[in-house]
Length: 457
Image 1 (cartoon, rainbow, N blue to C red):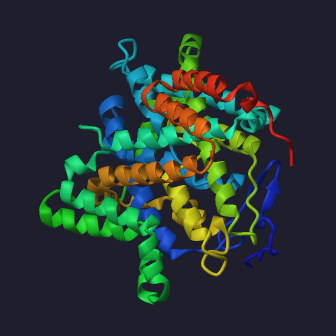
Image 2: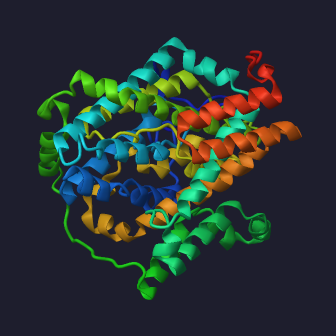
């Protein structure tokens, strides 16, 4: 029986330790529009690293798809088992650092060592997260961060996302790879997600409201169709079902530390600094997610969204541990998919009559935690040409949402200037250097009192 939520309360679920498990059709409802978005966007984006797995790690196509399936499964089950109101995703900015690390001369071409590095990175990162989560230090760290610094981190993510989506030769530059279909798809998704004139026009147009309710799906459908006729997207459909058992067994033999051996101590030591740098990115995503939810919460007093930074640390840490022993590829288990979080929160903020709970949207978008589409190779190969579009849409939505959020956090001209400098530092320098520049700029311009702990409410 579907559990109902008293007005102003938290969505029901099964408590276990600091976490809350919510089961589809018992603690959340099904949303067709969010499921269609998830199939198109999450499906295509989840496979975006398949070419990396093949080219860098020596996996076959079937093994690479299986690895992506495990990554997406851990992400898709996160909201169900742990109860965080975030749309989880990758720590995308860390992936270039990870690729550079495993292609260093010491590891290049040695796939066993590369997988051991991935395991070490994931376990190091998990240790940092779980330690900060269990001790509560992560939550205290979030508490002392001033709005100007939060704004700098969030605006930095916006600038970095925009720079990446327009960078020549980048996989996300769909404007270069498919200028007609790509531009049209991104534009439709952006307009459907944020256009005030379109939302106002649709108030008395039932058909348009239903179309807007499909979120990003129409943009992908239009772009995929136009791309086929312009020749920008080529579809090579494989009418097969993935042999999950065989591909899992061969992937396990090549990648799992139980099969290839655990990383030696020197790999754990050498990879620890990159895990620390990645924590800065995780921290930024957590700050962004919390600010987004707090702003959206003002319009939905009927559902209380519990924000617990310690829980988010521990949940992400556990996922990284599981990933490290099954399908190690570091930076695929993060806390927030920013572009999708803003889309789901936007639908949720329109009222209970449209979306009863944020978990209805998150659960349906992640196909109720069961990414079975990876098994259906016709579907996998149908989405394959849309990978650049999925990346571009995610980055453009992230850039827009982060920019609007960051600019709403500060109202003082000096803080606004410090925030912009911090954002530029985060977008053009390595994370640790951006962090250092941001702290120096804010202390110099706004005073050390900006970092004073906030009073508990």
